[in-house]
Image 1 (cartoon, helix red, strand yellow):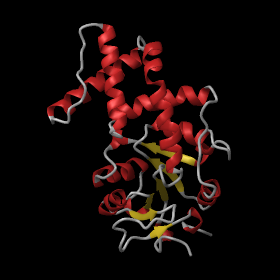
Image 2 (cartoon, one colour):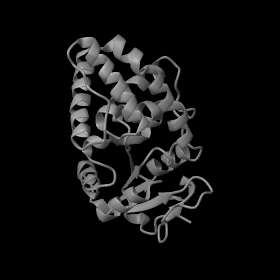
Image 3 (cartoon, one colour):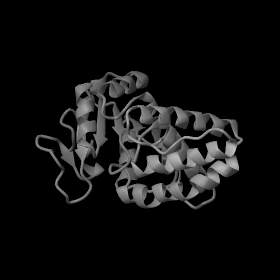
Length: 250
């Protein structure tokens, strides 16, 4: 059976990554620990890079926002370059421990992972049904795009280095939190506009119910992807798939 029922209207397939195209364990047991281990060496080796200096300023601004709402980030000391560097490192580890989705952190993680991919220490991972689905959807003339809290760079690195080869050749667009939060309907409206399609022509697939609901509010079609045997929380009434084989099949 092909999903969704309105498949003839679908012109764009918009995909989440974690738990949808890619195992959660790859993100939490490979990517996140790698970034955490490399934070200090990255900052110390690249601190004078103007891009890194700009990133530190973004982190400082985020730190001010966190402090203003009383969530208790570690102190930010900026009297010397060394103090500022140490503050940046400690704050990044604090953000990682909270699994923050803030854009500055995601940008930093993407740059650290880039080094890992370039050094052959990291390789992207996707579920086995993803490459054939990409080929099928492209053969059908549909556009494939990605929307993840991870930076666009991190997304591209992952799909470029899978065991099935470079999958970015199938993907027409990448979106991250710079376009908006994934639980806000306005983000999906902006994505549809950016792609040049009406929201109703876009099918969004994610393992997060709140994201699926936000996409539906924006008039997108949406299905919940449940990749393991655990029952999906509050999934009553949701269209659910366990494999991409059931999505827009021939």
